[in-house]
Length: 259
Image (cartoon, rainbow, N blue to C red):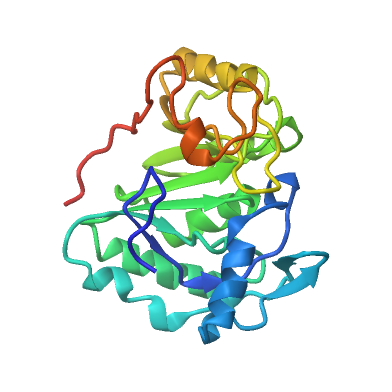
């Protein structure tokens, strides 16, 4: 995969395929159904990674390292923001440290790109990353997903990770995170859930994060309302749009160019 419709990045790179459900934010993960579609299209990389559960497909816990995809970013000459493992989690426990090290080597030798790595397992990230680098790579952004207050502890782990940029994806936002302390966090992405099974998002939950961003001078990016609008009415993602407080919010973290 390369070009993407994800609003906060330019391309995706998936050296790992497959995952397992970690918390409530994973329930309606788009990647599970996408993996099944890709398997149905004959893409061997995604074969046997999901199982049927009711009327949907969910991860079965199988994870596959794809060494054949490691050199893909090297071939991209134009600088890009690259979301690493949109279809998996680089810090899943089934991904070997040696393979993570290979991914790091690719990112190190392609400083023209900025890599955005998002995990639901920041505790493993915090344990592994210091072993991979003597100092943070300027072009690598490290983040974690936080969908509600039940997983707020992920932020504490993220803050211990040596990184040029630390970010949090509050998406899908399915509950309040309260007055979260974003000190040391450079960027916050916020978004409601989309799809036919989407859970509602409340404007007050977004307000909490927005205010925390103001307090800590964290860049704020509002990605979408998703399937539920601020008036608590269900519509398409496109119809609900991206306006928050009457405007779009596409703030990005300040980065030192590594090109």
